[in-house]
Each structure stands twice: as structure tokens, then as C-alpha cells.
Image (cartoon, rainbow, N blue to C red; front, side, top):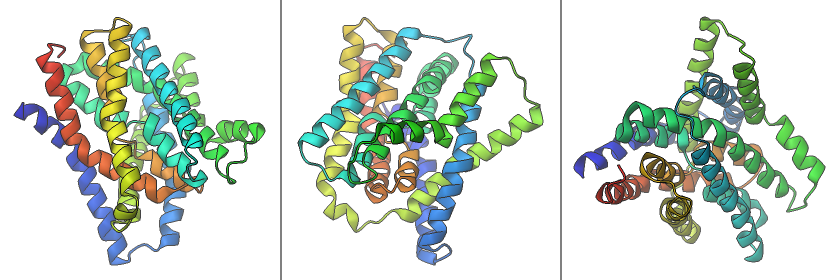
Length: 314
């Protein structure tokens, strides 16, 4: 039990430290609000796309491929996306906040949290299978994120043409598609180029966390407490529970069942904050949800791992 908790804490600690650096950056006045927005544009348009390109280009599709696991995860993400839109529209949620809340419903942190947890629990096979899930689910995340953010960019006016153009022109989606194309066409990039792409991609994930910390406002936690509490409950408890039950219903067991829970029960992805800021959505709420779900997932994932071990799943 203690080992499982330590695994979760080990995954979260680098995130907390980067957030703390971001908080120090803001309080020291090193970067102005305008500088933070410019840095986010660099991150969204250049660094994060390279990270996603590297993941898809280097994915090992020949091994650890589980079609039913991939299809289940995509189906669950789709359920959360459309379900969140239905609920948020019926409850009269503020248009500017829909992007952040909806992403919290369907988008989890596969690459920073779920991948290392899968490796710690299930070894190299678990890591390879989770990487495969990430390669296919991440493009779905981005398409849905652009869709919901474009839908609510101008006060909720829905323009299908504008949404489609937003998806086509989104740097994250372009990079992912390019990674798939080069991978499956057999194009071999020089090692020095691939290494540079990997380095800049890693710099992007680190910068994303620092900018998140710099944009985080503790005083907003009180005013947004209802949305933060409900968001954490869904992302960390309800979302993985629904995925767990659906996986059982379709006959998924063992390692694949454990990976489903880890994938759907991880905290809100850091890139959600960057996308909300890029699309003039409620980036402050997104930051609050990313930070709080990242902190509380130490406990929730520990409990999920404990339950699965008690059930003999892992």
C-alpha cells in the first residue's frame, strides 16, 4: 500500500515543483501578464506540437496494440465530451467557462501521470500499451477541445465552418497528424533532428507547468470552490468509475482494465490551461482544476490502485 502511494507522489512531485517555480516567477515580477501570454503562444504554437509529434512519430504500433482498449478509451472520452456539453448547456453554465469544465470532464493527463504509473505498476508492457492509448486518444482530445472552445469563443455562437477551420489549423492537431503520416509512410528523420524535437517537446511540458503556476490565483479557489469540488469529484472519482464499469461490461479484464482506470482517472491535462488561454476561455478556472486535480490525484489514484490490487487486477 505504501509503495503505491509513493508511486503516485513520485509522479506528482515534479509537477508541484514546476508549479511552485511558476508562482515564484509571478511574485518576483520577472514576467508581466503580457509576457506570460506571449510565452503561452510560443508554447501552444511551437513547443507542445513538437511534443505531440514526437509521441506519435516514435510510437511502437507493432507491439502492445490493443484495439479494444483503444476503442473503449475513445468511446469513454466521447461519452464524457458530449455528456458534459449536454449537462452544461441545460444547467445554463456561463459560456466562457464551458471550455474549461468540459475539458476537465473528458481530458486526462495521459503523458505526464498515466504513463509513468503504468510503467510502475505493470512494467514495460504496461508502459507500451499506455503509450499506444495516448497516441490514439490524444488527437481525439485535441479535436474535442478545439470544438468546445470554438463553439463558445464568441458567446456561444455555433459556426460549423469556423469550428472545422479551427480543428484543421490547430497546431497540436497538425503536429499529431504529421507524426502519424511520417510514421506510417516510413519516413526516417535524422537522429539529430529527432533528438532536437524531443528536447524542445520536453521543454514545452516543463514550460507549460511553470506558466500554469504563474497564472494560478489562490484567491479564486474560494469563489470557484463549487466548480472546483464538483470538477475534482468527477475527474478523479466518477470518470474512472464509469470507465471501470464499462470496461467490465464489455469483457475487459486484467492489465487492460487497470490501464483504463489509470487513463480515465488521471488529473486534468496541463495543456487544457494553455488551450483555454489561446482561445480566450476561462483559463483561470482551467488552471485551478489542473492544479487541484493534480494534487488530489495522489490520494485518488492510490485508492484506485489499492482497490485493483485487492481485486487481483494488478
